[in-house]
Amino acid sequence: MHRWDARYKLVGLSALLLAMSAVNDLRLAPVMLALAAGCFLLSRLPLSFLLSRLRYPGFFLLAVVVLVPLMSGETVLVQFGWLGVRQEGLVLMLVIVTRFVSILTVSIVLGTQPFVKSVQAMGALGLPPLLTDMILFFYRYLSDMAAMLMQMQQAMWLRGFQANRLSSLPAYAALMGSLLLRSYAQSERVYLAMRLRGYGAAPRSRGQFGATGYDRAALALALVCAAGLVAASWWL
Amino acid sequence: MHIADGILPLAVSVAGYATTSGLTWFSLRRIRQLPDPQAGVPRAALLAAGFFVVSWIHIPIPPTSVHLLLNGLIGMLLGWYAFPAILIGLFFQAVMFQHGGLVSLGVNATMIGAPALLGHLLAQLARQRGWLAPQRQFSTGVVGFVIGATTLAMSVLMFFAVQIFSFDQIDPTLQRNALLVAVVGYLPVILIEGVLTAMVMTFLARVQPDLLGAPAAPLPELVAHGAPVQEG
Image (cartoon, rainbow over all chains, first blue to last red; front, side, top):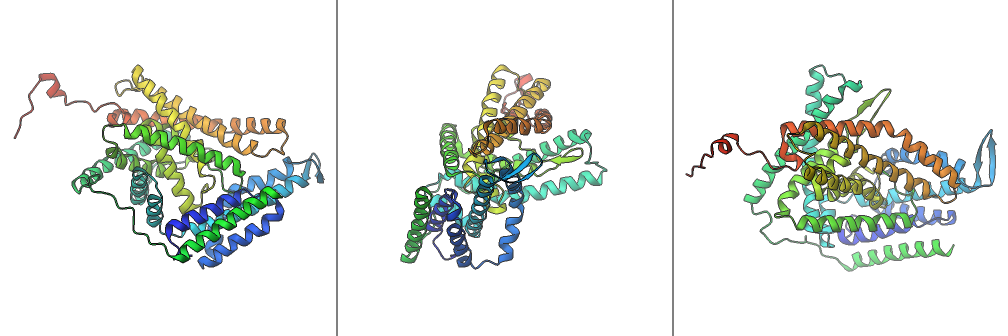
């Protein structure tokens, strides 16, 4: 999985992701899960890594898991006072949860590719240079900004800042404004330094990629699986 | 405020990608019409990183705390770069932190980025009328409040509408009521976002006026006395 050409991997796994979101029938859920498990096993990632990544986005799904069986459908299975668990809602909830786990698993496999390599692959696939440049700048300076924020917050707390009141809003506004000013000032310095190094003048390379027959075969397999999944969801 | 992957049907996700593609194309077209499009790239990217980090700050609303979206502020400060900046931020969140998702990226980008572009257009209108100017801090604050609150309200409305109306098996009356309850429940956050946007705007008007889109003030002594610029 990790030796797969980045461009082909991006296209193949994205097609699988879209196809998985087309699944609306519970009968296709095992197929979808099997495809996701296949991708995960091929990536040889530890299960603990997957579980740790699933935990946080799982909270977003909690509302759907609780509300959909109560709000969707007409066939009441169990009644608790004025609340009724409905069969159609329960089936829909199971489809959503399976879809969520499958899509997230494939996304996590896709996300293990080095970020810069993914951006180069997107550039090679035709993403405008303005966007790839912005992504790379963003990626490069995000940790700097995070460190800057932590330092500024520590400085505020050391000066006795109380963060638990609404009256602290002006201090938060000043913190936000100062951080934006610092990022603005840094961007000016970065731009001037890059201009001196010839930014914007040299012809662009589209990254060095070389696809083999195995890469093409893997892409074809991924596309066939995706097309099959979409066709089956329309058929059922 | 993200919609996670797997919740939305394919048609909604595809429609989100179509809207995002259109808005990105339009934004890039307007950026390329600027005198030096590349000059704005590092500024937009670093400010986007700054916004991304700022959105991690917990703002206390007793008894709880919230994160801000700041899409109105992004629109006002980044102009046409706002939509690509938001798209990049969301892509990064989806890939690195599994917040949102790659399939729902188009819907999330439209939901947050389209109001940001509206914020940019409203800010341009306010600049033309002289309401958004470093010298007029009160009106700058009012413009900041209106744009900050309006853009978040739009995003909230889209966020809940997309999720609630995507499930066609739910009773329409129940859908409308759920939408109303959700938006009313979000009102305090909308007000806080407006107030903080106003405060940040007045702060920037005092400290760095050229960030508001107005040209940097010329050096007073050169203008006042008409002193020639010395060479060498």
